[in-house]
Image 1 (tube, helix red, strand yellow):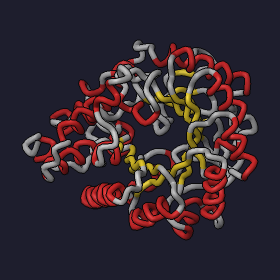
Image 2 (image 1 turned 90 degrees about the vertical axis):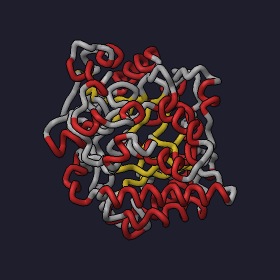
Image 3 (image 1 turned 180 degrees about the horizontal axis):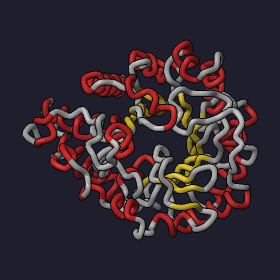
Image 4 (image 1 turned 180 degrees about the vertical axis):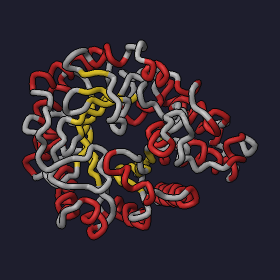
Length: 396
């Protein structure tokens, strides 16, 4: 997760994170990525069921799941363990998390245990009553997935009317004072919608947007040919930077982030060097604190059946199940060779990743993409768009 507004527009300084000692449990949510202890943010896919059928769904969600899901009591036990382990944030996802009848009770319990509870949703099920209840339980944030304006979004989501229902959900959250933001997955079929997403932020006064790079997992693995080329990715990231800068220059302080391609970090830094931006050294310091991709270390996933994964995209490999062992025990068990390597994966990446000047601030990027394309999870991430000169450090 690369905070474009934090880095390029200077809404966060290194001293902000240092003031809290960089401890996950003490940091405000907007500084959590700069923690030193890297207590894992945990995505809990509470169900595989979903009322939509998105073409890029990493969970391959279905209308009605026949798979076993953690019971309510088992979910509470999981949350007890996560809280005791020091997990700062639980992100409730799916499928569509709001399909699960006890989602509100689970999220309320997470908050009572001292964790921040957020949900990742398609937004279509958030009526006024549901928005009020989400606000009342102390939910920190609602991330609503949109893939463009109405025509494009509905095509991606597999259901006509999905865009309008999602926008209603956003407005319902806003009316009760619940923080809500957008999630947008970039690819060749919708990259032209990026300017429209920025317009949407201003028109509806939405405070936050995350632009996700495509990850080749679930149904997303069938869209590899639709991923942006390296040059197209550079243009998209430049556009996001330019539009974020324009917002801030007009006094519209939106939080803009890119997610799932940590090459964005050095790319932003190198751009600032080219522009002789005096804040470039501070940005480098923040990127060093961030440490890049943290799958299997500062980021983890629990599936609907209790399986533990390095992240929500790595469903083909489970480290164990919380029904047999607590998450905290699974997460710290270095007798599993892959878990041990992910904790210090910079030692094991190959090719241009191993030679990259920016390895310490990128963390080797996404191992799932490398494995999906090459069959070798330690191979270079094919979505890294930095040039050979850029990875050599010659331009730094």
